[in-house]
Length: 433
Image 1 (cartoon, rainbow, N blue to C red):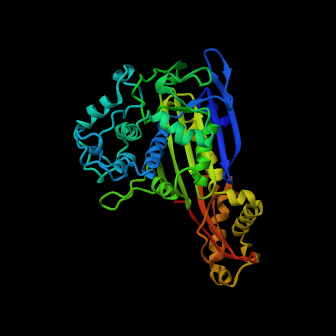
Image 2 (cartoon, rainbow, N blue to C red):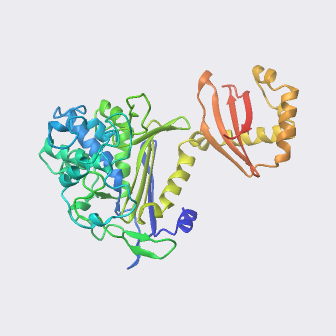
Image 3 (cartoon, rainbow, N blue to C red):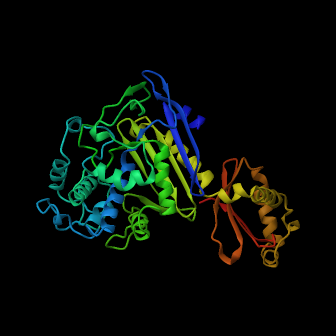
């Protein structure tokens, strides 16, 4: 954390970590306010930007659970005069496969955004432009999609979107810090929104005017409350199981390709672990939220520096990603990592034959194989980095591990498989891809 903040020059970062389905760590670093110095605390709110999209998606899923809409309903059911409304479904809006062009691809607040606008005016203006692709055939990130989705949620529920989310999501989960920045919710409990131009000093950011963040980025909250939401995703405690599956499933395009996006969530598999989440960047803030639902893990990192100017939150999330999602078993079993290091040293020195091996390993690790390992690995010298790089597939009931080994300028991938009795079944070393 200290390295990331120094490297990026961010005023503050606030973290929350969920492990085994419970919040196990919360800490804020640096200054929430710079112009009149005030330290960041775990009670400081941060504007979460596009992380808000998953709450809009969840609100619509809850309405679908109530039988008030279907995700496959067309936009024309509610807004028949909106261009292309007869061709675009609610599901396509939420999965970014509708084809409506994004009204805000820039990493800054453009001139129009400094003046208030009605969300419906956004929808009409940008929906009138040619589609980027035929609905369902492509995937491009589009804030316009979520403006329309939010308008549908309001029309179906008969309530303002934030009121709907507060009633159905925030209150049941105890998310008491959440405010709606679209309706003057910002106050002294929120971090100061800041920008930097080039390598210059921190400056107050230019805020988005009312209306522009509706349904796509209107929420501000503490990392603690965002972690409560992550807990609910892990425990599946708010939505029905089918809704969580829909939200977290990768969207398939018409040609069968995966979009890498579910409903309000980026989705994927990393190191054999299913991961869902989102980043959020609005004027003066950046947030990263990642959840490994099958592993009970989640990471929230927020900072009060605008857009891509700050990579501190990203750096911290990636670092914690590496520590938590993949090496978790080895952290709980430090002997596994210690043994891997010992075996690698033995391979470099030609002593691997002395290790306890299974019958299969003895047949594979012939004297020629061991000699080749020793003569090629020894000149690399002792590892300067040796870290777990993933729990491999668990075929055959073995304890399977991947490791990243750095020797000088050479990066190696080590794969180990160990039988239940502790004997070594497999030991493979190759250049890291």
